[in-house]
Image (cartoon, rainbow, N blue to C red; front, side, top):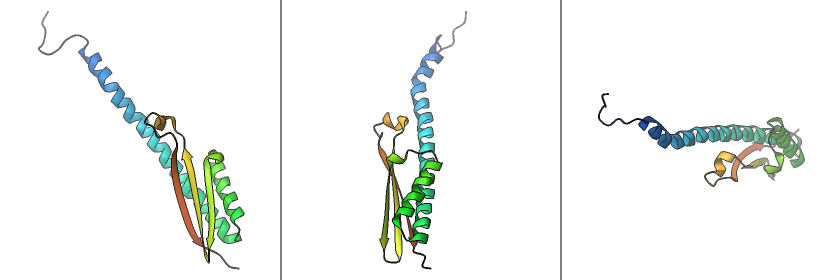
Length: 126
């Protein structure tokens, strides 16, 4: 039986077991990043819908209701959202803050991570 230099039986399994944690970390980080990007897009849409509704009606309650409806349509937990609608003269601002609770982020100590999106508009006068 001929042996090659530097090759022993089972060395591939040992090398794979050493590389596997890094491969899994990259895989789960990609999943968490995808979830965060999806959440950012949903919050951007929700803030825009809230600003549109509040600018048309002139009432903060309509803006908050539109934000909640957009969050529900994306099947997000509305109890993790904080919605602020503020009027300043002819302008309004809608801020949506959402606390992210992803299991993949819990592994690195970022279990409760706030994501914020703000939209500003002019009031529509009839």
